[in-house]
Length: 348
Image (cartoon, rainbow, N blue to C red; front, side):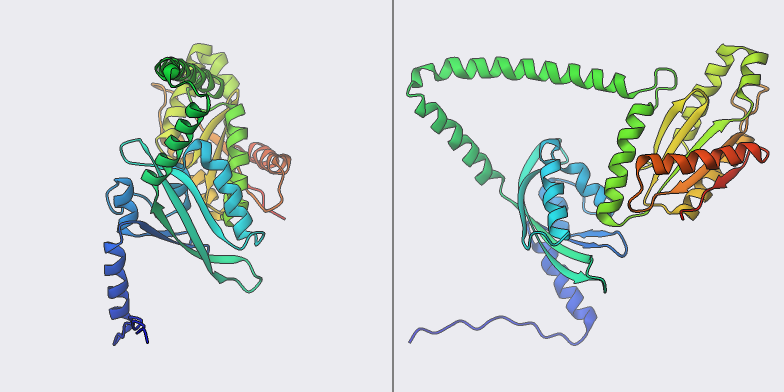
C-alpha cells in the first residue's frame, strides 16, 4: 500500500512566533503577495513583490494607487472591470493576467490571484489577500508562438524578412505617432498661461476619482478658490502683472499640496483642487493652510493677495453637477461673507 506523506504543520508558542515564521516565509517567496484592507485603505506587499518588479523593498506607499499606477495602460480597464465584478460578488474567482511596470520602465507579465477573506456586517468586502506570479517567459513564449503560427499559416516563409522589415518600419512610425499624440494630448490638457491642468483635464480627473472613491470606499473632497479683487489688480497694475500673479500663484499652490492632489485652472482667476482619500474636515484644513500661506506670501514685489475658498465632499451617487452646485455655492458664500476665508458646504 502506498504511503501518503504527512502534511507539514507548524506549532508556535505565541502569536509573535507565528508572525515571525510567516514573515520569514514571505521574505523567501520569489513572487509577490499582497493584502488589502478596506478599513485602513492600506495594501501590504511582501518583499518578493518588490524584488520581482525590481524595486527597493518598501519603496512605495502602502495604498491602491501604487498598484493602479503600474498596470499597463492597455490592460488597466480590463483589470478594473474584473476587480469590480469580483468585489461586487458577480464573479466568485479573481484570477487575471496583465502587465506591471518594472523599475527599469519595462513591463512584466504576471498572473494576479486573490481571495476574499473578510466582509463587513452588511456583506461588503473589507479584506482581500492575493499573489502576483511571474508568468513573463511563458506568456511571451505564447505570444511569439502565436505570431510564428500566423506566419506559417501564410505559407510563405520567404517573405518573413520583408514582413519583419515592414513591422520595424511600422513600429517606428507608430512610436513617432504616439509621441505626436502625447504632445497634442499634453497641449489639450494644459492651461497655456499657468502650465497646470486645464478645465477639460480637471473634469476627466474628477470623474476618475469619483469612480475610484466608489470602487474602494475612499473619501474624496474638492475645493474651488479664486483671487479676491483680481479685477482691481489688473486695473491698477496692468494685465501683464495680473498674468504673472496667476502664474506665480499656480506655482506656489503646486509646491504646497500632496503628490496625489490634483490642481487645475478652472478659468480666469478661479482654480480647483481634488483631494483624494480626504474627507470634508481634512479638506477644510488643507484649504485653510493654503489660504493662510497665500495671505502671508508676496507674489509680486509690494503686492499681496488673498483668496476665498469653497470646500465640499463627494458622497456616493453624486453626479458631477451635484458636486459643482455645492462647491459653487460654498465659494459664493465665502465671497459674500467678507472674502479671504474658507466656507464648506456639508453633504446632506
